[in-house]
Amino acid sequence: MTATVELDTGLVVAAHGRHVVVETPEGRRVLCHPRGKKSDLVVGDRVRWMLTGDEGVIEHLEPRRNLLFRQDEWRTKSFAANLDLLLVLVAGEPMFSESQLTRALIAAEQAGIPTCIGLNKIDLPAAASARERLVPYGKMGVEVVELALKADPVTARATLLPLLANKTTLVLGPSGMGKSTLINLLVPQAAAQVGEISMALMAGRHTTTTTTWYWLDAARQGALIDSPGFQEFGLRQIEPPQLATLMPDFVAALGQCRFHNCSHRHEPGCGVRDALARGEITASRYRIYGELFDELSTKRY
Image 1 (cartoon, rainbow, N blue to C red):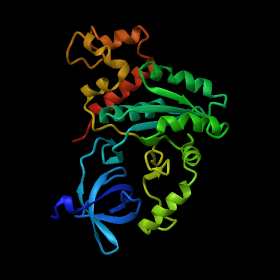
Image 2: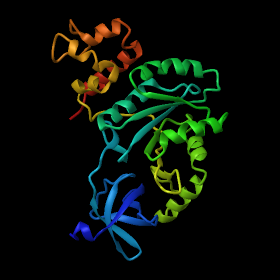
Image 3: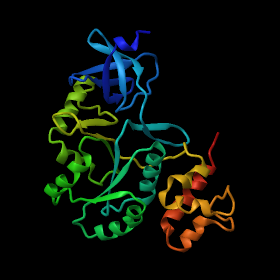
């Protein structure tokens, strides 16, 4: 193995199968392959690599600060690594899934990634209902920013740029919430960046990368990572007793249970259910907790 001190440093800005695009500190992008048959590299990884001909070989993965991923019964799907912020984009039309939102926030909490919720389409009638559903999240400390990405792009841009400045932010959200509008608003050269990555991957216009890295500024200090929409968000990496500790509105009540191994489902003297009765935990959040607890309790090994 070549000593890591002799290797070039780089940032993974795209991944497709065993191919990754590595960007050098000077901004050059090089098609690279990991040494070995399997690649666990994701966008946001810092690597050490060496040039072999026109392409590169990844020799070393630098330690990650964090990794956001989801896991179901069959596979683990990683989104990105070394994140400063997760921005979950939701809207009232179509109405967002609170279960999907909760799952993303739980995964981020486990990974130690700060979160923010972007409520888009606030110019539409359904925004009032969506806003009401997000009240508990604001109370538990998650920042909620309101946006009208299409109707009022100037204000939306002014709201988002200070929030995202000098950060690496992953934008998550199901289809229809406005992710593409957000990317195009904040990164006018987005299409050019996608084309550049496709050229580097030699993938052509018919192949899209799973996840895409966009620089927000010429100094390359802030970045957006766009990940495809998802329908399911498995949390099989979490053990059932850990679940409540990853839900901020539950945490305050956890020390008030009579039994140290309380599941918060049926035991007497449960601090969480007492908090539910007092209105400190909403019925919808408690319902989602129950669904997740049951899901995680029926793991297949």
